[in-house]
Length: 154
Image (cartoon, rainbow, N blue to C red; front, side):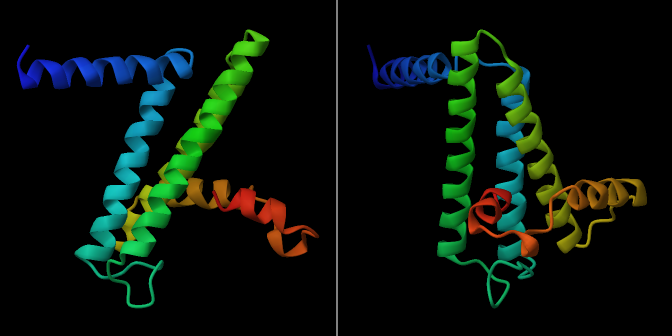
């Protein structure tokens, strides 16, 4: 077995193990993963090329901001894993699907915001839909506990 075959074997086993943890893999999970990658890449472009990132004081790339973004994406996958495991216990898919859909919408909003920061034209119906989605998030200033604020920031 040459090096390429060994690498493919190891990656295949690892991928099967991950899919098994999630109880299988579906199109919603693939969509979420693609949107997460697109969001991260558009964020890098906003900061690296356009120097217009709201996440840093200068608007430029900053390794700490990138690391925080990756950690947040990892935590999204952890929440999704927990949702999948709960669904396996309950013999349903509603928790996983709900988590996927909500995270997909969150990533879509972020991607659209990144495109706007790049100066890409966003059609008004899409802007209006995003404004409506954003307005559905409860006003965090009136919350007694910081816990719900932290949950909403994901």
